[in-house]
Length: 64
Image 1: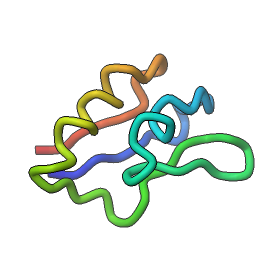
Image 2 (image 1 turned 90 degrees about the vertical axis):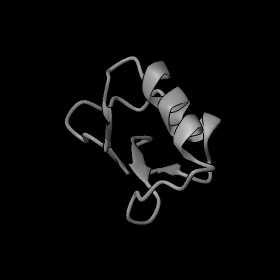
Image 3 (image 1 turned 90 degrees about the horizontal axis):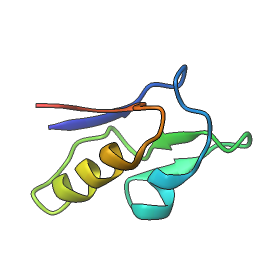
Image 4 (image 1 turned 120 degrees about the vertical axis):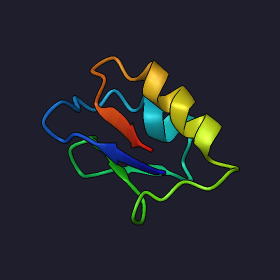
């Protein structure tokens, strides 16, 4: 499974990197991005889903 952020949808609310700083970070404009290649482990799947559910722009996608 992989997590991605759609940069065109992200408006920089920061919920993703506030909830999961080990999966997401922000750029100089405050927009979120995935750390590394986005591959999720058994330990990070649930927190990635939590971030996806809390993104107001629905910019986070999880590919199965």
